[in-house]
Image (cartoon, rainbow over all chains, first blue to last red; front, top):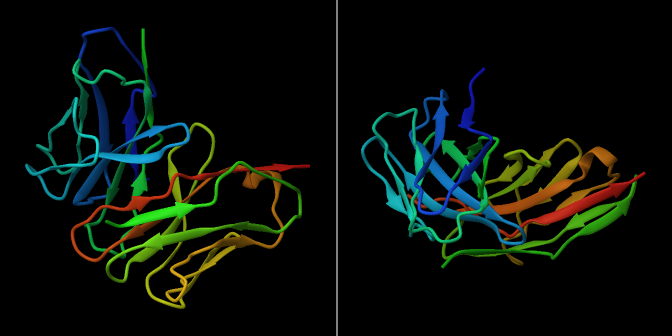
Length: 114
Length: 112
């Protein structure tokens, strides 16, 4: 079955530590996205990528970094510069960024601070 | 910039009640509109979409009509079930290379 796989489902970070969240898709989608979800705030866009080796900052990119070396993979690193990283992180993909294309979502990674 | 405004939740209904979740949007052009649903502990799933004015999206008994004159895309269902309890997100996408813009979500709880 085609889909988006996020791992791990739960992740704990110590103070001053970088952590990387994995996102893999086998849908052959060009565009991929990372969102952060906090209670009562909906989804906020962190980074997105339209094609391999290219990505753009979203609304809340500070303290995060991404790479897009392969079409199917779009890992997100939460750096120590992100002072409030506790949240639910969602990865999504779409065929491209045409306006009619829906996004397909993974099941998310919940990040907590130890 | 573009924005989506949803009615504040939570919304609590009895089983078989009628559901309306209001959604209005602000956009410079003619966006496509979407409703997504999120069940506890999961990602978002596309529920329905509409790509132009007067289009009606429908799925699983849910409906929403793209109203350009009122810039709205309200979600409705005639008879809700306990299994419909979830968070519902309205979203839009402008033409061109812009990601989806989401509303803040509306939590629905249906009690038996």
